[in-house]
Image (cartoon, rainbow over all chains, first blue to last red; front, side, top):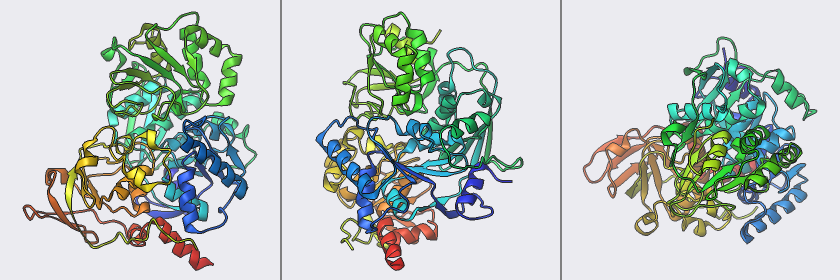
Length: 414
Length: 180
């Protein structure tokens, strides 16, 4: 009678069964950090342990500020490269690969039934593989590097069942924006989410990752899609490690059960300045935009670029719009070149940036001036996040962003 | 063993007194600590100079070390950036009282030894610039202006253990030293 969260945390804490609100010490299977590994490192040195607990279970990569946008970041990168060598960290992806939440699955680090922690809030993305994946802070990670363990409170679980078939141009992004808008920015705070239902079964792995990724924006600790055959074959193709799929018991207890028929769902947009400020695209259609952005750990995958390329094929974007395209990884970038998407984007007037987080978190590469409006496929639209505190960010699907780039105003796809 | 410079001060003083700096609901970590400063990873004082800088620039000129932040629901939502808790700690914020915290911020604060307590409905009972006296262990909060008392949610003993060690690093230093 346990949920996925309860069953995995029982496994990694050496218990037969655990109950919500219990606190357990859990053994970590995979520990991921990007540039903020520099903050982890500082705390790790303070603990005074000489060697990390397991050099094969730590993943370090660079994605937030690549190539280095400042001398400070260059120093961070250099210090971490040296640390990786010093410790013999096996899984290190320098700035050439892309965004952590794409690189981990691509290189086989996301496996069903395991505990994965990352010093990034969108680590929930990996719940799409049936992994208990959650974000932690840097000091906490230094403890994991030293001991391989951390304390976790067993979360209650919300079950979200999706049925029906999505309309053309309506995607997983619209579904999850609708859910975040309904439950609110703290609607799943401290809780696990389990996505299930026939609609999920028909969704690609990339689309499932969108659901798990954006569940963070309602506070979720972890957001599972229970693995099916497609998940298992995706994971098996990328790892030689054994894993065991863990699904919920048929009589698992949920603190909340939500059922959504997506058949009539329209395109959604999160309006400034919060992710739960969700409206139908048609309610804000006509709002002038200055920048459009397709990319990020939420929507920078091949199917997203494919959708955008089909819309932009043979067309030119509005002269007052800057369209930024950021493939989520090197592999996706290469695939997009092979499919001709990149050529389509360049011909349409887009600027292609290197795989990475880009301007999503406001560090570099396309920040906004006061009064400017951006429509983006990213995951946060907080005041000032992408540049000026007087700018405005709308979050939407790749289709909505592509159509809006063509017209120069927020536009309902179709 | 290296000298512990960041966590040498015990943060679990039983009694904390301070002036209230009040915020609303859903104060996110981009607002607390802008992403453009994430490349600052080691300079505590520089982190402290950017608290709330972009959206609430008045904070830096009107808040004082020792102040208590009082906030509504979901304080610290958004990114896992530890600088959001660290900048407030190094600014000198003595305690954060909120109706609820986003989970990663809550853990970061505990791990850094920045005291945090959950206090239901506190924003209805406390206004900006009130002075509060808090018994951290009992969770009793007294408003010095009108004598009103509020009760914070009690922290689990396990978490109190980490806080009373001064944060996760001193806690682990003790533990790892014990194994040597």
